[in-house]
Length: 371
Length: 98
Image 1 (cartoon, rainbow over the protein chains, first blue to last red):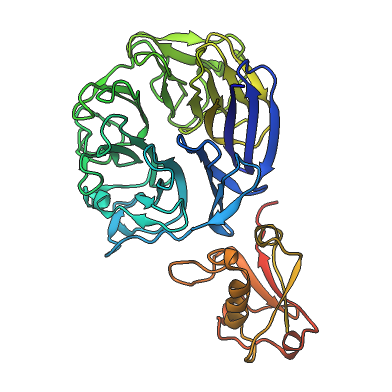
Image 2 (image 1 turned 90 degrees about the vertical axis):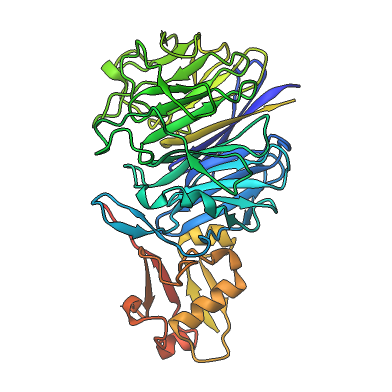
């Protein structure tokens, strides 16, 4: 029987929401790692029973857990993240240089080619790789050589929050860092270059078109068309048609072009989704109406999706890793809010309903399609 | 035999009860007790002292016989009542908020 397993990371633990392909009735399991922040919980595309979870508190630091049975049981694995070589420094809020220091894991990316390889994006921003399913970790240090001294923290910290493995080129990978920008390797991580041409940060950077320093919130790529990338920047929705070498704004008619996540329909590479948020200081949906916006034209022309979502008195936020898509024939979309709701649409966004209403603040949502 | 009380979240992580016992060959110091605790329960490495520099994590405190010995350093020799097992050595997760 087909079904889905939705992996939810929250401020106070992880939850696993399971359903069949209809996505009407849900089994809720959790909290797992009760009381700990789970920034990310992510399953392998090669082995659906293998799941990684980032378990953290400011009191006790970072732990990493792995399940090999679909989340039934968990084993603590390697949690030492040591920067390679000379640690170096990065820019901080007041313009001074500070040494890199590990704080937490923001994202896991299990390899799409080898079930024992997994990547981790961390704060302070760096990319780590494990070749033994998370028992040991080594930094991919060349990334920080891409003008790392000019990177700086966003309000959430200086985090590597998005990792994309190119679906058609095993040597190519993209990462996004706040606030540094997007970076690409074409040789399996030996060399990295900033790919931020076209980004404009008029209010955030002294040089609005600087090569690095941009507050990129999220990027997405459809596996069928890997040269096309979409970006939710701090402000602006951006699109690249050349693997990130150049970006153009496609914010179009959105009520605000601030937001955190951006995602792509599983079966329609030009259908993209964002959830606009009022900013800079308020960080809740404009007019208190929770609206997902969909563009079927790869940007510029957007329609509001509201059926089943609160259209009054809604003041939650949706964080950058809290939007996910299943691969069922009728594409399912999931997002979580800082108010503890996880919403699902089983029909590409036309209709929504809450799976749960009252979880802790949701930090991340991922989904596994089970066959 | 040294009795060590650890915070709830570390109990869950290490799958132990409120109090664990460690054995030391030498006179117990704060650092020696933590070394033994991490030796017996490797999952606790990094949770009380940082992996990278070995320093105490900032929100944790150490108490012995009702006294806060946190700032005495890892070389601090614990009182006789701790050495004998009469009193537990306590690792406390500091609380904040109203």
